[in-house]
Image 1 (cartoon, one colour):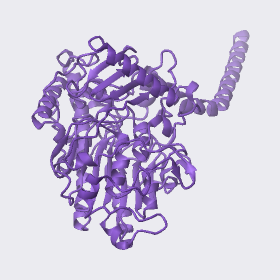
Image 2: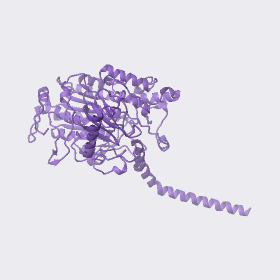
Image 3: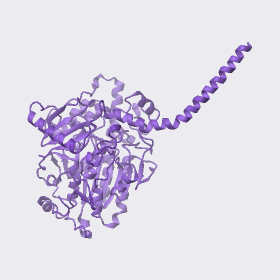
Image 4: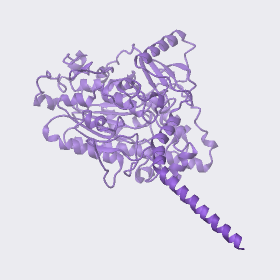
Amino acid sequence: MKRGVILPAIVAMSLTATAPAPAPASAPPSASALQKRPNIVLLLADDWGFSDVGSFGSEIRTPNIDGLAAKGVRFSNFHVAGSCSPTRAMLQTGVGNHRAGLGNMPETIPPAHVGKPGYDTVLNGRVVTIAQLLRDADYRTYFTGKWHLGRTPAKLPHARGYDRAFALADAGADNFEDKPIHGLYDKADWTENGVPAALPRGYYSSTFIVDKAIDYIDGGRATGRPFFASINFLANHIPVQAPDAYIARYAEAYRGGWSIVRAARRQRAIDLGILPTAPMATMPDTKDWNALTPADRAAQAHAMAAYGAMAEAADHEIGRLVAHLKATGEYDNTIFVFLSDNGPEPTDPRNRLLNRLVLGTYYDFDPAHAGQRGTMTYIGASWASAAAAPLNGYKFTAYEGGLRVPLIIAWPGNPTIKPGRIAGSFAYVTDLPPTLLALAGLAPQGPRYHGRTVEPMTGTSLMPVLAGEAGPARDQPLGYELSGNAALFRGDYKLVRNLPPSGDGHWQLFDILHDPGETRDLARIDPARFQAMQSDYRAFAARDQVLPMPAGYTANQQINDNAFRHTALPRIKRAAPWLLLMLMLASLAGGIYWLVRRRRTRRR
């Protein structure tokens, strides 16, 4: 759709009272038009699994997110990338991750791919952010929390369309203190409006990120202009940490183990209508809970208690934001979008001796202290299987557990959005920017922006779904790739390939509408479709210049290698002269000691 083209009939009929068509580019929007345009709040969780929200089947208390679900639409077949930065790039731009520059992340890219087209590892200059487009339409634009799309001044959110931004350039950081994930980064790279910034005393990440958003929103209220606030939580990225009061609420919740939680979540998801009654896969790396020692079971239960606590703490802060917008009269005319950037994190950061030695000097790993200040808590693959229930796979993989996440869109004051509905049609993260622009009465980004050629948005507006109609037809293939794990979606079917250790590198075919757990490979049963979708994938990979991964590549190993190369090795090089001097002094002292002893021996 070109700029200035009238919105589709369904949009025009359903939203005329609240989202007028944009004024011509030569004339600024009138004050009355701006007042009618909705505010937009984008709530992005980090590493939450498909069923981590109560209204998707979780035992975790998320009453405020569930309240938004009751006012809006839950999308049960919504997909993102398998890792954070590629999803964030698509969410900001409506453009596929390779074309936006995030063919891989700086933490997981192999050296051979660095600098190749589409492998910028930052949001490139060929895309336009939704913040830029909304600011052009006289929106106030704010960003708080995790950015992870570039760290130089020209790549930070303040330079990509956000009026005000307090952003973390890294994949994660400590949630209680101004310090990095040790072993991965030298410092926590926080900036405000592109300038290095320090965190306040008494900091907790979810609280601060919402506090800052409220400060920004209130600071611009007198202008009368609508706002767009992108609020990006660190919860539940490693290190999993939460205030003690929240952890205490889950002290007994996970003592039965991951298999019981996984089965219970599956049943609740079916009872809620989120998913059909369908088989559930058992992931090969899920351990036998009953085979663990009592001490190990207790340690695992403590870790998952911290995870549930961190999610509930984030939900509480969302509720505080919602209450504030109600108190200031902004709630009814605000669009709320909640989603996760990928599936749950299965990684064990202490998966090798060097990691254990390094992290042990910085963090408390006592299981009884899980989630508290000073710890680096993580849930591992077995609990990640429960967080993704009833799907197969988790973060990094291209299975549904890595790509399918909860999505909620609500506009409380707009009666045309059918409250409490569940939309089961396929949706993708690139659909969100054109949808939000349409809700604001604006057209999606085309191939030209301010006189230059850019990547056009490729997503499809979800407006008909929000208005209660069937989802848009998905007859055209949609390709995805990250770190060698890949998928091709077409209609109700998904072609998928996962490299070791999560897969064997062979393509599989699933009907993800009726078999969301990916339990029945249709490759041999439906060979014509299998071959056609492989052809579709090859066309996508050629168009987006997808590179094959080096032999033996795994994301986990590459994280370790890149961390050593970029963090540990520079420290070693800086320390080398001092180490050499110390060795020389030690050698000299040893030589002197040897001479003295030799002379004494001769005298005897």
